[in-house]
Image 1 (tube, rainbow, N blue to C red):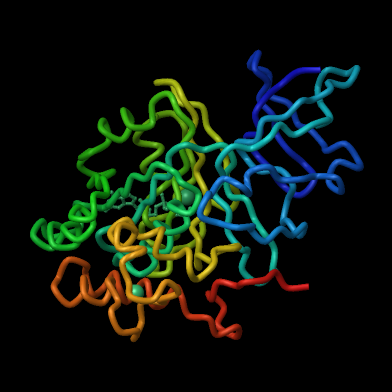
Image 2: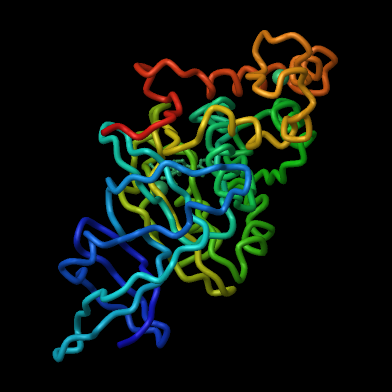
Length: 329
Ligand SMILES: Nc1nc2c(ncn2[C@@H]2O[C@H](COP(=O)(O)OP(=O)(O)OP(=O)(O)O)[C@@H](O)[C@H]2O)c(=O)[nH]1
Ligand SMILES: [Mg+2]
Ligand SMILES: [Zn+2]
């Protein structure tokens, strides 16, 4: 038996790097999928009980620590046990109403957007931020392709997030701006690059560590939607120490089990206002005596971020991105 970390995960087939440095293809012990339970659900004190459901795209994600048995041949293994997860980046997968763990046991979420090609969609950035905040991860926002933007435009886009207290790094694969800082931030921990397709996640990782040779989209083929060049999450070892997961660009960021009343807690500028509204069950929409509305009115909270908050708390069940209170049966 040996312990290791999952570096690639497909349905049923995994790659595990053991603590002694061996890299082995592994399968999952037959009945493991059925009795799999998750231990990371109860981390939020503010929650009474999170919705639990078994439908999971894959019981194992990159970043999971596992115990494997190596077969007699020595060239493949069987995953016998998955060790309890600490934090994880979890979303609801697009068409399938399933829970999908993008990366397990990560500490830092690096949320990558590009200054241009594709233009930054700040509402989407906010959804990534909420996803990471909900998992109580450390967050670094990276604004890549700085070479394509007018510096004054950049400053404007960034000011809103800096004011909230987010750490933002501007980078460029072309000029090399920000790459050393990025490498230093990744050192010695497990992080994940996430963001829309085509923003340059794989390109940045290739710049952070020359020699990785991750596949990147061809410049001539860029469309504003991105091309989904990276198709599976992959966990990479960094020469400076640490691990980083490159993930495929997400078209949509859907929350798995975020309750509407918890969304404001995932906005750092709204969180301190919680408990200050006239009504304890205030949804911060049109209720009188709402501390959030008051903060928007006197410019302490950005109206655009407030719009983002409103969008994320829509409860129309036919709306794909609406957070659900109960799991579908
Ligand atoms: N001008 C400019 N282009 C960049 C920069 N970084 C990446 N690109 C280009 O952007 C395109 C997409 O880069 P990728 O690294 O494949 O993007 P990705 O985020 O990994 O995309 P997915 O794998 O689809 O999620 C490629 O053509 C890159 O050459 C940059 O800093 N400046
Ligand atoms: Mg990629
Ligand atoms: Zn309120």
